Length: 152
Image 1: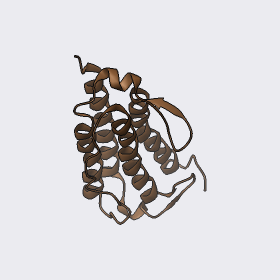
Image 2: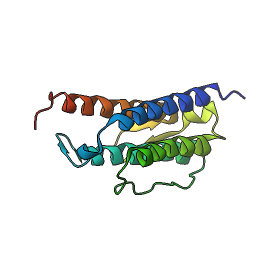
Image 3: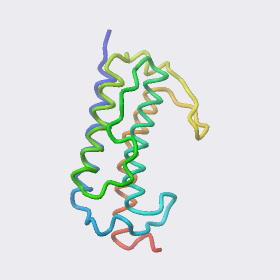
């Protein structure tokens, strides 16, 4: 049985989280508590949201496609105050993903359908694609804010 799709999806999620980590590495710490227009409220809240959403998206897939739900090393990242620890939290989402989906088959990803808390139906593959795009969405949001395009 092939696991090529699962491996590719996990690898792409890792790439997205590594890219987000590189962005965080360059983000000045004194901006963490600055307000950013949008639902999250601040830079720190956006970083927290990316970590928690990463865990959450993968948890949906694991629970509905035959995976396991490993322990989160950063279950509440709100008090993180340095880029190195934020990057460690982002890398933990990658570790969490690899462990959660290690035994999930491509067939299970395609057939494991579920409805999210935001009332949208996904299969496992679609949720992994959503999880992979999510960090980039917030990189672009923060870049637009840093460039003054979002206003106040």
